Every structure is written in C-alpha cells, then in structure tokens.
Length: 186
Ligand SMILES: C[S@@+](CC[C@H](N)C(=O)[O-])C[C@H]1O[C@@H](n2cnc3c(N)ncnc32)[C@H](O)[C@@H]1O
Image 1 (cartoon, rainbow, N blue to C red):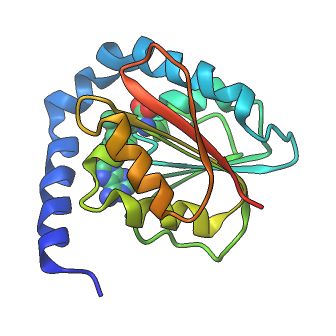
Image 2 (tube, rainbow, N blue to C red):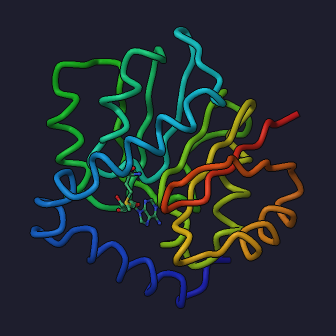
C-alpha cells in the first residue's frame, strides 16, 4: 500500500521537474553529461532492431536522440508533464516512440515484457530506490540498466540496495558522476 509520505515526496519532486526554468535549461546543462552515460551503457544493452526498450524517467528525451534507430519501439515514462512535452517535440517526426506520464514505482505494464529497461539519473529521486528497482525488474525479460548520482547514493549503499533486489547487478567502471550498473534477468 503506497504511503502518504511517498506521495508527498513525489509531488515535491514532480514540482521541481515541472519548473519552467529548469525544463528550459535542462538540455543545455545536461546534454553532454547524459550522453556520456548512454554511450557507456549502450554496449551492455540488448540491442534489437525489432525489439522494445523502456526508459523510465525519460525526461526531455535526450536518450531518444541516441537510441532512436536501435529499437523498433521506445517507450519513455516520466512523472513530469513539462519534461515530456520537450521530449514530445524532439520525437515529433517518429512514430516508434511512446511517451507516457506515469510513476516509476507503478509502471503500467504486465510482467516480463521489455527486453531492455533503462533508467538514467532517476533513482536518487525515488523515496525507496529498492522498490523502484524491483518494479524495473518486474517488467523486464532481458537487461535492466540503471544509473544513480554518486553524490546522492554512494556505491556501498547502492550495492546493498541491489543485493536486496534478488538479482545480480554488475557495476560498470566509469568516470561519470553516476554509478552505472546492469543486470541480466535469467
Ligand atoms: C535527472 S532527470 C534525468 C532525465 C533523463 N533520464 C536524462 O537522462 O536526461 C530525472 C527525471 O526523472 C523524472 N522522475 C522523477 N521522479 C519520477 C517518478 N517517480 N516516476 C517517473 N519519473 C520520475 C523527472 O521528472 C526527470 O525527468
């Protein structure tokens, strides 16, 4: 049963990511930083031109620029309508992207359907990252790739969380401001 505390926490996060100034400057501030994370993770993913990828916390869709030609269908989920509006503009010429306003802890999908599930720099925003990771695992039948801001969750804490997920995650060496980890669902 979701707690009111979680709801209020997420409402605050949602407000932050709907701030017009934050949304307007996001791409300029984070384009290069996020792209480095995507490039590091990409070789670990299940690239499949006839397959699907789910990106949770898709934001303004910076990832879509990179991934648009790698999968048959890209589904992007985010809690911020303002961030999604920017993503929508970005993909206006593509039919193979679906953007959905939803909460990462309650993904509107059945079990085991996405060969690739990614989430970049979202988990530090979640009230209970373990619950979120379990939700990503629930909808995946292939690989789950996550990144989390080091300054918010250090590697030891992240390792503890990942162990509790019941799946085997490997941390990827990277100079990034995030810790990057992948898990192959078997
Ligand atoms: C730091 S941004 C990263 C955006 C994107 N992944 C990127 O690489 O540029 C974090 C994103 O997570 C979204 N977010 C925060 N809490 C969320 C939640 N509970 N469910 C879904 N998305 C959420 C925010 O709206 C924001 O777009």
